[in-house]
Length: 461
Image (cartoon, rainbow, N blue to C red; front, side, top):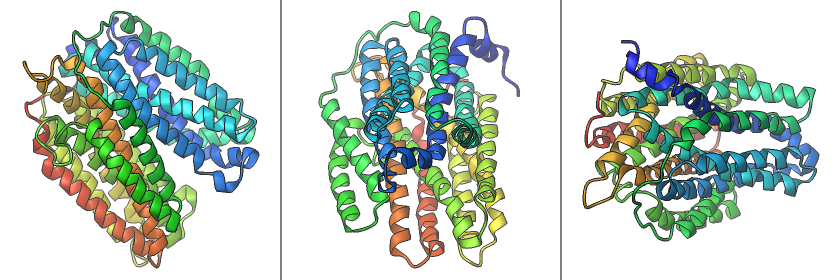
């Protein structure tokens, strides 16, 4: 069934066209910057620093993304997304300018800090904007488009950044995005003008220190994942000791137990992101180190996964009448099947070409699951806002959105770090990645098990 006329009008009618395009552009800019910087970073470090400093621009971005995510969520809950959707892109753009004009490593790090801060707040503000602007029936379609806004940069970002770095300079990987930031803000401006702050907001104390603690914890885990020695192990333990108490303030009660409703949604976001993105990070290594593939050939299964994600996200967006918890379960099982299939690829005796169809399956699962979680997040924020408990839905979307993004960031940092530790401790990459895949398959299956708990009510058709 194709989009109904009401959904199409809600997304691309005269009153919605510019804000829809603006949202997609804002998301695409963050995605392109994250995908492209990795390609340009060897040239950046060669110009400004030592190879030992390679991880710091990434750690700086991750740390302030956590802070921006938490503060952006609280800002939106108290003041609404209007100012956040103007200030966050401005901070992100300032980071692009500072990094793009950097002639010292310290200046580059400042730019990355600003980019992370703006990107974190902007991501949450976009969710709150979607909650306020689009009808519930249209949200699956919106999140299908948002998924595409992440997938397309994952395909074109690295090669474009490589060409720009080689033909012009790595500086233009940052500076070239600045005009698009201004265009995106101008597109969302008409919708932002009409937004009003929530009528009420919940008191949430201790968010700022908890956000800082979480940033330090996630940054420490990211650093430890690249330093699999004794100092790295100590850093990982200390980071977890700082992070776990902070998370008790930053995610809904019952998240670690996947309690029915919004807590299960946040838990599901961490499980699916940890399983999919961690496998994506190590799949090229599996194919190059164990089977001798070239880097370009090893990227083909990732392209297949991205295309599967985009196609499935678009498909689910055209079917708002379907149960989102059921689609989430199917998506989790798809990710589990894709990762389990790679157990036939990881060993030295494995069949390398099977990576392509299995990761296509995982991509389809991600397209169904991730988009469904986004729609459920907004629906469950409304369901949690019952009289006498939590106030208005608009007063919680920022908090819940930031919690979901934190679960995503934490799961990736933790399990990518685990993969690095296994590579250092076990005999060969084949053995290490086989063990890692078993863990990730179990995560995805756990996500399928808790999927029915993500819907305390069905998304209205």
